[in-house]
Amino acid sequence: MNLEASPGWSGRIRFDFARHRRSLNLSQNYVRLNEFPEWCTVEENVLYRIHSPTEEPGQVRLGSELIAGVSLAAGNWIVEPLVH
Image (cartoon, rainbow, N blue to C red; front, side, top):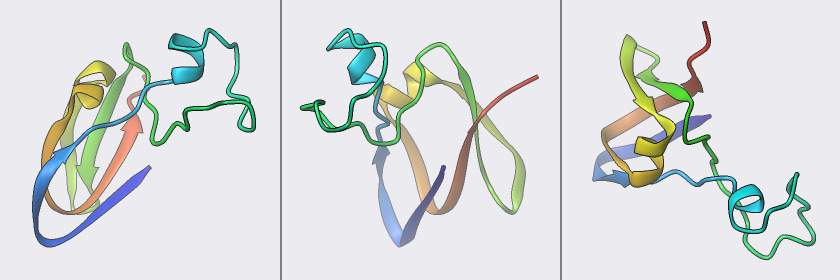
């Protein structure tokens, strides 16, 4: 997923978790039946790499850290699961 913030913005980004699984105990997200929409979901026990297109190594964070919230500078960011 890609995130973009205008210059001068500062804040904390908080990602969502799979509510259909954790809160509603459903095996999949039934969009029309799901009362709570899910946005930018991450898995708690998966590692994610956050980097900008110009900064390759970036930082590695656990999904639970992304759900708690991370501070990012303004700019263009790419968030992707880290796979081996």
